[in-house]
Image 1 (tube, helix red, strand yellow):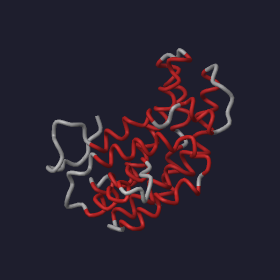
Image 2 (cartoon, helix red, strand yellow):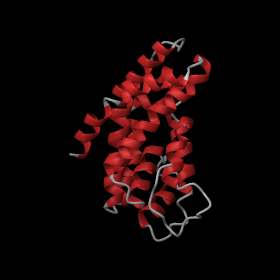
Image 3 (cartoon, one colour):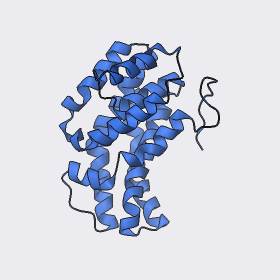
Length: 206
């Protein structure tokens, strides 16, 4: 279980919003959807999944998702609500490869943004909620995750590393049943991709 700062404004009986968003990534990063989004061949083996995982890491996770989270975190940490909203508004237009992922991304983003509603003193949270509510911005899960990191003082390096870890695990988990992967298969696939992440993350936070 990940640890995150406590905040008395949130119900203690529920999973912390930061942890919950990591656990929800399987709802966004489905292997079948990624296969279509990346123009990859249908998955028939662990080898196919390994290729998809690397394609996802090099074409989506590192160049698109992690930088978007990092930018959202920076804007939110500085209390720049307008800039955060503008980032969210522009995101899909800048990344056409995200088109197939958008419905799930915004569904999860809006869900977890609404769970931050009790934080009435967090002006940036409330302004993003209002912008999403009135249709001024979509509310991608990447924006909301970066905002959540800022609200709960999650260090950027930690947040990016944990997002990347859980994202890769989500892709593997959504294919594991169909491909009948053993735990050893899953671990081997993840070890190869996760080993390459620290350098990419270090470049973003340097």
